[in-house]
Image (cartoon, rainbow, N blue to C red; front, side, top):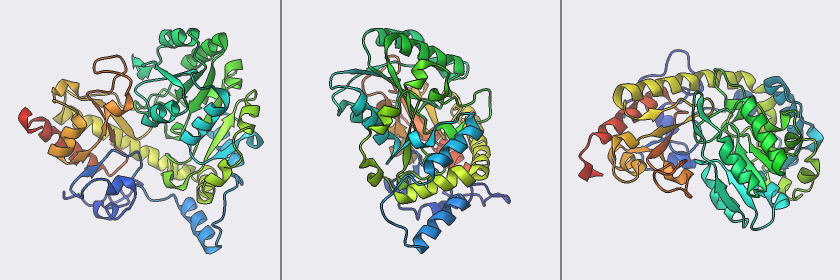
Length: 404
């Protein structure tokens, strides 16, 4: 494709040309042939924030490439959380883990037994299903319902599952893939149900720094003034907001009554983390907020651009603009495409998007929470790439059905 020249004032999302991005060797830029626009993997097409780049260059210059220790990462995150969310978690109570998913698995290994029931919202992050079933847990699903700000938690569904004996609720806050930011009253209602039924909440908060302008602010679950929040554990990282997924560092952050759980996490998790991830996370939380705010402005522009382009060229596609993150959850069922629409867009449009079915493997098409007929599209890229991707998808949707 031909691309327009970058705007005179560049943003983190227009820093690189498409040709420069194609030199990258991450999964996003190598899993498809070069004629495909890669918009599946959840990483962004940004440069490193300058403080992060400087920290990593300094480490290389010093030969500082040994095993990781938490260093100043817990204190850096606590200060960031205080500024951004009004939350003041205790740094000594935090534990370093390689990534959020590993932190979730290891927390559940300590707080559940094989055969226990865990509740997840569906659609949900695909590794939830595979990794948690690997622990011998029984997964039950609670689909959120469309609401005025994207989606809302189905509290009646959660209460049924909690009352039936669920041991843990795995909350994704903000929610992936819908980008929903849950309101304080929703989270307080969850806390009330969890306390009534003895359910522990484990909260995946990896998207928390990426909340867009609007009526919702991120509320860390352990920050709630509630006994169930005090028993909860949150998993956090700089990896999504500052595009550091390959550097491997996250934190398990306990509520005041869950410190013993986090303290009991396997001591070798530190060594499985990456020192560069720790150093990058410290720099991000301490000096990276200016870059983050610039990125959020660019992402806000892209999510509005995506909505406008869909309305213009694919008006039947249902897109509730995400309140957080850089992926959009698109309902393409009104297009009437046969089979998996992600496969159609890849073959006929040369656009790589995530299949919605991967986000709800326990649901059949048409069931509540099913991702069949949906796709997840990553708009954390150049604006002209977003426009080109939608136009290609529109052309593919108009092809004869037998071409799929």
